[in-house]
Image 1 (tube, rainbow, N blue to C red):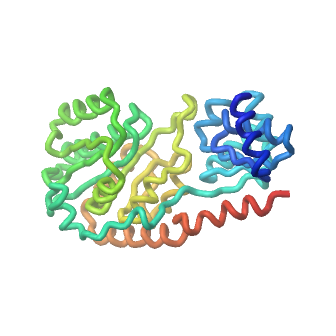
Image 2 (image 1 turned 90 degrees about the vertical axis):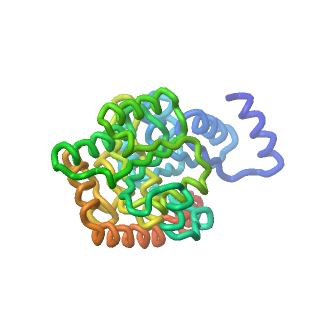
Length: 313
């Protein structure tokens, strides 16, 4: 840390920085705290959630308490910082994640995209996007939900396909593939890894709904601080289903842009509802798209960051 400190001091000598922005509450924040104390800089720290869950020590507490502002992604993280470190919420600013609209533009229509991606024109596509994680993302719960639709509700699932897109982890990939095979869902499931952003966005645009029933693993230092994938899905007119955990309730407006669910039975019921009701899917998808355009593009979010900087005392 001292080596980095000396490097930044060199740049500061020529640029005379006013503010240090630390991108999480661990090493960057400790370095920012050093610069604040020795060089009289203002300090803003971005807290994501997992960084503070895993580091509830005296150094993290001291650093956060000495920050001039703390930026978080959701109300959940704001409350977490307040509860864990007794920091006044007036010092905490919520700046959600968002999208850069220029990076998200896809010009082909849904039918053209499905042909290009070798997807059926007539199937119902459920999409999840996220790093392959053994339990937290809840991809296995979606696979089990499709089994439940078949076995409990006697739905013909030949028309349903579940697509997962994520950074590869061979162990998790094989586990999910084996799980789908165990439930005889091989034809209802595909897992795509390490796609470029443009191809990933095409899958968003070609799908029908987005689902990520993340588990609350805060006791193990793992939580969804916000869930920007729900915002990405909304931009492509997809209603979302997500768990009532972490910052997900900030990312989904329950009953309007999608559904926030509390348990597995609700997950199955909401997938069933959206599968059987195209008009609800379309209405929610349109609402989700307009919601993203109004409040979750970086063309708007950057102003929240400017406010954080401009309001430093």
